[in-house]
Image (cartoon, rainbow over all chains, first blue to last red; front, side):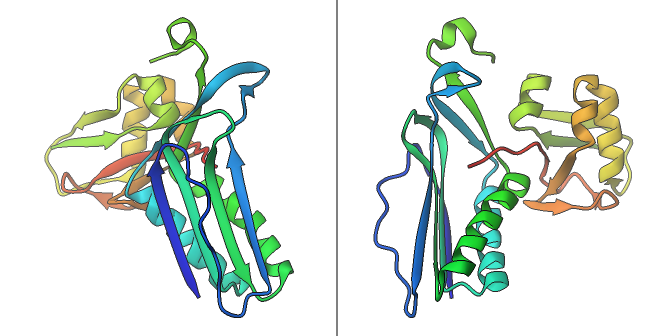
Length: 134
Length: 83
């Protein structure tokens, strides 16, 4: 079993090779910045993180998921700072022997992350001078 | 003793600061629940938000009865929204 959690500045680069010995299922979820929020167009999202706690929490959740669901490998990446529309700000990759545990773990991880990991996002307006708040 | 507490996201926006301080009488420490109460008194705008929040002490979530001192790194964690 291997797990890894990384927070990087700006949008995430294209995913690299992700594999695990004995895996029969490898799934990847990518969170993409929406171009609007509540029908209000935006330029992107700004992600604020409490580090190093946020990265440690992402890693702890990866370990918990691996143990609870019997996974072979988990890799999670999250952005900090500005990420433009349509770019990737979150990626979760899971390898397991069979698909069911990987799919269940994927759903569990994202739900729990949104409750426990100290990361905050806010939409960045198209014209910050008109609508942004300090 | 003066405690410094870091704020993020909606807390920072509501208070208008990235951190706040509490000036307290000198003693060994103070509980997390007491800190939340004092923060709510000092910053009424965040009183309701504090009810759904946690305190991070040295990068780990703490119980409300945990005792902290000036040596601890404190941060209010509430209403996270990553992903």
